[in-house]
Structures are given as C-alpha cells and as structure tokens.
Picture (cartoon, helix red, strand yellow):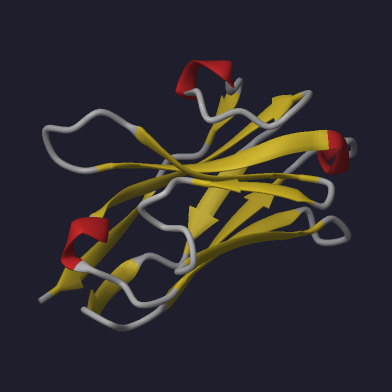
Length: 121
C-alpha cells in the first residue's frame, strides 16, 4: 500500500513558478512509476507528467515549462512548474503505480488528495 500527500500549491501570477511535492509512504516506492495529473473545474483529469527511474514523460502543454523529479531517499516526487499560465489553474494530483510509466489516469493505483494551483493573469 502506498499513501501519497501533495503540498506546495497556491496562488501565483502568470509567468511565475511553483514547486509541488508529493510525499509517499512505502519501502518499495522507488520502483513505482509516478505521475502528476490535473483537473480544472468542469474538465476531465488530465495527464501532466510521469517519471520512473531516469525516464520522464510530459504532456505537450507543459513540455519545456514543467519538470518532474524524485528523491527516492526521501520518498518524494516533485513537479517544478515555471512560466505558469492561467490555463495551468487546476487541482494537481500525484499518482503512483507498479510498472512502467503511463499517461492514462486509469492505470494508476494510488492517488493523493490534490493541491490547488491558481494562476492569476
């Protein structure tokens, strides 16, 4: 069983930066693929980024602006978000799964509670 707790959300002006953190429990967390998803009001939850070992995947909408990373010693996954835009406003969720990275929400077994990111224009 893996438990995930996100933090680091908040209000930021367009063009600014935020770093989200996702603290995970579980001794074997380093072998899990992790992902960040986001959900804006009235929208489907969408893929943002994923990571496993040294590999990463990004949605086209965030490529070049967001960076996913992890510290396995601290059981923490990060999402560094730069050059934020108003359309990045959403609740951001951390997720984990055994096996390879995936962009599909339904492939992930464990989810955090979400953290709100609001970008003002």
